[in-house]
Amino acid sequence: MIPFPAWKTFVKVSLLDTHVFLWFLSDDPKLSSEAKRSLEDSEHRLYLSAISAFEISIKHGLGKLPLKVPLEELLTRQLEMNRIELLPILPKHLVAYATLPFPANGHRDPFDRLLVAQAKSEEIALFTLDDALAEYGISPAWA
Image: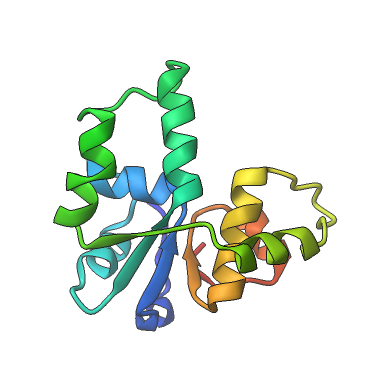
């Protein structure tokens, strides 16, 4: 189980990394009980990026991501049931993406980089387990 530092429970607006979204919906034990409680908190405003929805669609279509529910339900009903809002890709996100430096750790994943750009331009935390994203100078809600 991944530890969840107590000070991070004060974050009330978060952009969910793709893996966190999938773990949350599937009740995956990789998501700590503290992290799950934070996500279930009705005062915690949650967003899923359109790029994460796109990534899920691609991986599912290629047979690399089996889903417990149909893709359409995952991207509509499950979002609504879990109070997760879809964050569209806006021009300001693309501008932020274009100006992101490439960190020393060599991280170049375009999906992750767009999530970082969105979190930075919206000034919200990125709820992630990916330590490599800290190199971008973001405020992770969970690392």
